[in-house]
Length: 470
Image (cartoon, rainbow, N blue to C red; front, side, top):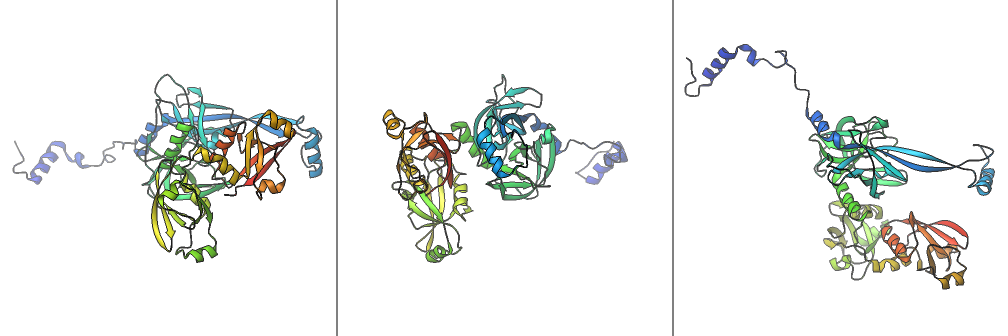
């Protein structure tokens, strides 16, 4: 009997060769044995597919229908028919939107998707991979982030995706997209990360900090998961760039997590309040403040006793970065701030008196007590709820809304002819019935550059776009 003595490798190899023969040292292919086809991508898809859902939403479309001509009218006549025949010749029909979503909490039935998938929807239907269908409730939506959270009620726990990290993504690493492109359920595409921190212009909105990938993302894929090779969620696929060919975009999951937390807790995004106002820099200001990189935003005003004042910021300081992200404009400043939650301590890089400083600002929820003053500064109005006395005084016909009682001298509304007694009915999509509604809208839209107001005077209603004065 042979044995391996003293750990001699050659003796051991000879023993194995004698016992098993030369076939032991041939590849699986040479021996006619198949390779395992269940690679990492297959395993990831198998793990996550049950958590990917099909979303169909139904909404009403109202289109003008000319009683004599369908198209080609001179604009004058088109205006004539619009004024004299609407709404009698309006066509109403149901529109449908198809998209994808991913279950992020199986025990509570929460599903993450894109906001544009369910926008304007009156009814949302979710279908699981096992073909069970559910009516979904909209928990909250964030149009600026193109994210929405849905909820479905089930008897048991649903399969959910595992959360990954998007802060350590690498250019070139493999990614997997799952969704329902063009209605083809649970289609899988693969690719690599092409770039990070991309900005994408879609319609009238700029989306920032996207993941760019060459994995195909088409209509219907929107809202579905972007996975890493381990099957963990690193992004939400977003088909918003109509000119993209061979280019896909996804919202980083770390950015989405903060949005999801707010939507579940409040039904909307809570933007942290720092208690300061900023304006863009022009070349003269850059030269005046001697700013080395020539970029940043000027602090134009600091709220008394607010977080920024407590941290040491003053009017005239220049904010050059928030966290690790450079600030180039008021738009980029507000976009970066929206990525934080109220209560976060936010590091703000400041150019102050010719030297660089980092201030740590303990953000807070915007104080409701300041909302009416902000409405006066930003929109130029003070309002009261409709009362019997105000109805008689201004001949008010509106049953809902708040009455404009004061206009700030020089404000846009004052310049275009708004006057006390006008009734404010809506701010953007928010219906205004009470002063509390007005304050909530002012707080919600305080970082918007403009707002669309619906104003009623007696029986006439008109929309006005007002650019914020702060």
